Image (cartoon, rainbow, N blue to C red; front, top):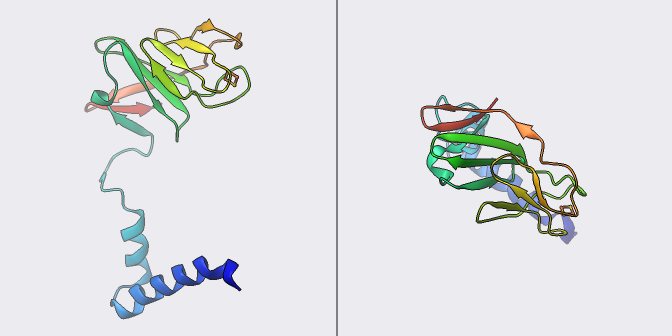
Length: 136
Ligand code: FES
């Protein structure tokens, strides 16, 4: 009996909002799904200020790493480690590091700095739109 408890609770809450709160189901869904981004593209990764010069940022949900080796020069790579498929986990200095087995990649071009990975991170295309990094 207890294993279904979270689902029951969620339904109860939604029903309470839809009926008791005077909202339509559409209203509830809009309230849940709205990101507040207005006309932002769904492929937007983040703001350019999220990526420091000489460093990189991992966008794990999108499996993308965006780097800025020099000011205004943004590069993007797949965050999937070419060794065994883990998502790279940290940025250390100018290295993109996979925590699974220690592979390191360059923020400049995604090349392998330290194995066991043998192939570079796959390049991705991004563009800058109003100071927002957008996956192409
Ligand atoms: S999966 Fe990344 S180093 Fe092994």
